[in-house]
Amino acid sequence: MKQEALLAQLAEIVGSSHVLFEGDLSAWELDWRKRYRGKALAVVRPVDTAQVAAVVKACAAHGAALVPQGGNTGLVGGGVPDDSGTQVLLSLGRMQRVRQLDSANLTMTVDAGCVLQAVQQAADAAGLLFPLSLAAEGSCTIGGNLATNAGGTQVLRYGNARELCLGLEVVTAEGDIWDGLSGLRKDNTGYDLRDMFIGSEGTLGIITGATLKLFPKPAARMTALAACADVPAAVDLLTLARQRLDAGLTGFELMSAFALQLVATHFPQLPRPLPNAAWAVLLELSGQDESQARGALEALLGEAMEQGLVDDAVVAESLAQSSALWHLRESIPLAQAEEGLNIKHDIALPVSAIPDFVAETDAALARLVPGARLVNFGHLGDGNLHYNVQAPEGGSAAAFLATHEPAVNTLVYDAVKRHGGSISAEHGIGALKRDTLPLYKSPVALGLMRAIKQALDPHGRLNPGRML
Image (cartoon, rainbow, N blue to C red; front, side, top):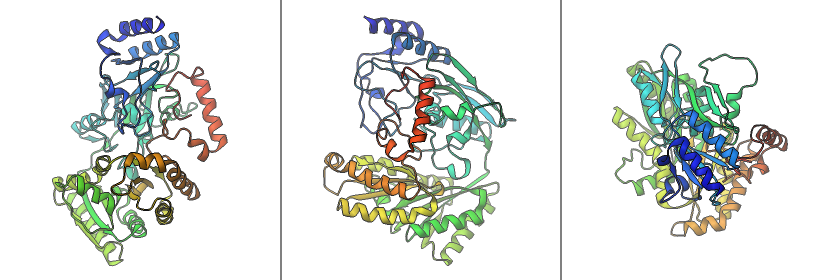
C-alpha cells in the first residue's frame, strides 16, 4: 500500500502517462553494455526542475531511493536501478530546453536532459562552438556528461566537462533547489559547490540545469591520419605537434592495429587509409584560415617523417573525408560490442608513462591469458587510454569474463597505480568499480568523500550503492 501511495503521488506530480511501471522498461532498466539489468519501482519522467524537486520530496517522505538517469549511455552501471523493485528511476529525458544563449558572454544555459548533439547544434546555429564531443553524443545528455565529468576527443584543447561548465542548478536530497546557474568566470565567494556536484554520479544531488562555456567557432579544421611504428613514436609525435601547432592542436587519438582491424571486420564499408599501420594517430588542427592550417599540418607531418616518427600519413581533402577518418575512431567501441563482451579499462596515465605502461602490461597480459586480444585506443593527447581486453579468438566472451576479469583487472590496475595513473579517466566509478576503488584511492580521500555524502545525503537515497 505504501508503494501504491507513492506511485499515486508521483502521478499527480508529473502526470500518470509519465510514471511507467508496467510493460517493457528495458530502455531504462538495462544499461548500454547490457551488463546491468535492474527492476525499478517506476520510471518517472519530469519535465522541469520544479517537478524534479517535488518527486524528490515525495520519495523522501516515503523512504524511496532515487536513481537519476540521462541518456542511459554510461559504461559503469551507474544509471540503472538495482533488482529490488523498490528504487524510483528518475529519467530527465523530457527536460530538453535551451533556456538562454548569451553570445556576448559566450554561455548557454540548458536543461540537464538536453542531448549533447542538440547543444552542439544550438551553439553552431549561433556561430559558436560547444566543444565537448564523444561517440555517444547523439544520445547522451548534458546532465549525465556533468555527473560523470565526461571527457571525449577534444579534452586536449578545451578540457573535460568540468572545465566547460560555469554554473549548475541542482535538486538536493531533501528536494531543495540550488540555483547556481551563474555565467561568471570569476566568483570567489566560498566553496565551489559546482565542482562538488560535477563527477558525483548523482550521489550528492540531481543536476537539472547547467550554464556552459561557448567558444568562437574555428573557421578551419584539418584532419590527418598518421602511421607510427610504436607507442614511443606516437608520444614523440604528440610532443612535436604541441611544439609546432600549440593551441591549434584540438585532437590527438591513438589507435592500435587490432582496434582498426575490428572496425574493418565489422564495418567493411568504412575506408582503410593506412591498412598496414602498427599504430595510427588521428590529429586535428583548428584555426582561422584553411590554407594556413593545412600548411601547418602538412609541415608537421613532413618533419615527423624526417625524424622517423611517422611512416605514412594522409590529410583529409574535404569535410567528408575528415568525417570518415573520425568515423573510424568512433566505430571502435561499436566494433568491440559486435565482437563480444570485453573487459574495459578507462585509465589515465601521465603521457610520458604510457610507452612503458603499454609494453609492460601487454607482455604481462600475454603471460596471464595467452591469446587474449588487446584493443588499445584513446585520447593520447590527455593521457586517457581505453585499454580493453577481448577474449581469445573463437572463445566464449562470457566465459572469458567470468574466468579472467578479476585477475585481468588487478593486473592492469596495479600497473596503472605503479605508473602514477587513475583507474577511471572519464567513465566514472558507478557499480562496476565501486568495490575496486578502495584498493587504489587513498583512505583519506575516501573518508572525505564519505563525509560529503553523509552531509548532503544522510539517508543514502540518491543513487545508493554507486561510487561508495
